[in-house]
Amino acid sequence: MNRVIIKLSIIFTIVLTSLAPLFSQTKGMYVLCYHTFGDKKDPYTLAYSTLKVNLESLKRAGYKFVSFEDVVSGNIEGTKNILVTIDDGNKSVYEAYFSIMKPLGIKPVLGIYPAIIGRVHYALTWEELRRLSAEGCYIASHGYHHMFLSEKYSKEEPESFKKEIYYSKKVLEEKLGRKIEAMVYPFGVYSNIAVAEMKNAGYKYGLCLTQKMAYLPFEDSFAIPRYMITKPNQKGLMAFFAKKAQESHNVSTLEDSKKENSPKAAKKNVDIVSLQNYPQRISKMVANDIIFMPDNKQSEKPKNKKHITKPRSNFKPYIHSAADLKRIKKESKKDVTPSKKVSDQELNRKTTRHTFFRELKEKLFDIEKELTAYIHSFIDLAATKTAFVRDRIVSFFS
Image (cartoon, helix red, strand yellow):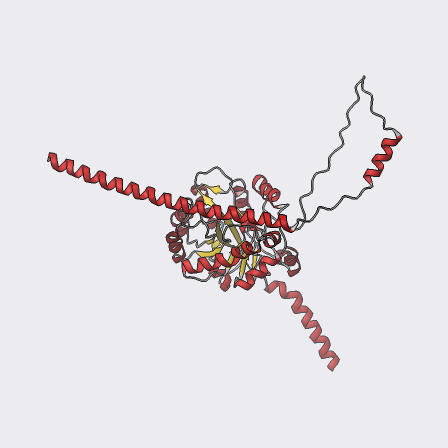
């Protein structure tokens, strides 16, 4: 009797385990990453009209726009959901929100790096950011100076590395009066050490750049995938989302997505981006409609094809002598000498140089802010004086 009960228990456990995918990962969303809006010709700036067409087409396709609060509370149903995120805190975000997103009921996640807020002409002011926050936009850190959160940067400039994580959070919380629990990784770059420091600082979420749907509950809350929307790829991505909206999410789709989002795969992708492969991958993504999928492998260089040229009538190929052949064979066997490690003196020099340029950048921001204030004061004074003179002239001749 006991053996029968044990066998039945084992069978019941196996059945429940096999049916688990049917009841899990049924909630999900596509996370979109925008940057700036307007008439600029760079690939990251979308026209306001293009943004409106994109968002309206997603709504017509049956997608529901969700906020980050909905996501973390689990208050979403199904997989036809869209979360909008906007990086950098450009001034165009303010107009885009009130003229396009708010009428559609969209509350985006704003990735903000405080070094530029209220200090440069193209960035939001703190007053504008507070109003957006009060409207329901979710504010996340985007570093302090928008630097790579890589292991290399943590070793070369440990203090600056920690400033990106800790100080950005502190400034945003003090200026906005709200808790900051999410980090939008600058450039989509993050590392094991960055995640460890973020957890220590009190972050709970990290948003990267990876091409896949984000399922709930998160397999890794510090690697929430996003699709970067650029000028060249936006049409293709909107068509992709429209196609996905028509497809039914069957069991096989859920199984595949579960494999993609498995803890093993997430662990493999933690140290995903190297500074060597980042520029090539991001430029390829922008130019060729390929979404950024970071990994440990560097982009393979195409093998040089041997070009066979027909010898001319007067061409005489050079015949290597025995000594030449011996020398070539000897050189080919030589091991490639590894690159020398950077000395402490050189590392200190690099650190000093980086610190100098960062401080110089901050001073230039302050100078620009003061000059802008002086110019506005002068314009106001000129307008007041002009109005005064005009009134006196009118009163004199009346």
